Length: 305
Image (cartoon, rainbow, N blue to C red; front, side):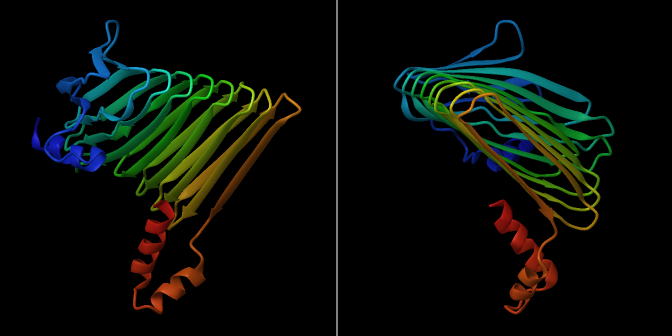
């Protein structure tokens, strides 16, 4: 691994020189290192670039690390990763991505992840994205997540875009079975002329299933963000979608949450709030000795925490 990859690993996956557990490190479209465990098997896909990860039924407390790094321009890295989580398992998957570009040509990573989570299994999915570099070539990260939750299965998604990404299109789709639960926490920061778009599409098919989608974002500079979500209640279910955005400088945000109910016992709610930082919040922090810029940074830091 080169030094840029090592720095990215520290940022997106808390790398401390080694990983404890199963891992696969992707660097510039190739496998840099890989390790399976007794309960978690990582193999290459036979028909496309990417991985097949099998977690044995009943596996508890283990982690899977699958960070991906792009360290130069003129590279379009496309990877397909499939996760098969056995019945009753409870694991954490860490899937960060970093893109560095000091060149004129575009650098892009597109990770397409599919989750097949069996009965009563639980997954915590953590994903951090960051981009660096001074080149004029764009730095793009376009993740796609496709989720299938069996009876009683649950997935918690904690996703963060830390900064520097010129363009991102984040697509998440899910189908929920009986009593399945989906919880998503998304945080995005854009600046300059960056653009970010989020698309959620969740089908609440199972009896007693539920989804909670929460997106928090800050649009600074002249950046633009778009948030789209669609919850489809097709059974007795609960669904909640929320988009909270802070505007700074000349940033702009569009939010379009949608609900579709086709069952009398589908309980669906959506919320959207867009606005600037309240003046009284800044004033309060300035009375404690902070400058206006420091106060704004503290408020944004707390908002995205």
